[in-house]
Length: 155
Picture (spheres, rainbow, N blue to C red):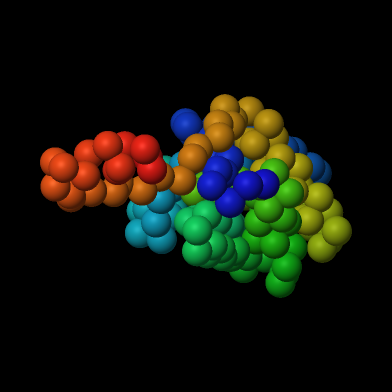
């Protein structure tokens, strides 16, 4: 991937996975900052207030990469990391995926949880409209009118 462009999503999407009565709903959204991530998380927790877990991962800022994942009570590495790995393997930036889990009464085990979080996240990514964005900078040039030809030649 070139350093001057990156892949992201333009609108929210969802993925769904069911296993042994448990339901995993993955919600993918475009985010620009950690503050956006926390606002998104609070919205999802409010909407799905009756869910057992709200596990997530995000990756932001293609120039100075920042990422984080959270298992939210699931066994360590069984939820947040599989979600983050889906984001990384699809080379996405400025995205957050939250997977809401409704427990179905049967334990899935660590490998079952990893598969469920990975699959639901992958479904949300598959449903998303992925676009390539270019890193941009606003530059202001100041010069004398007499230098116009030289400046335009360089530009």
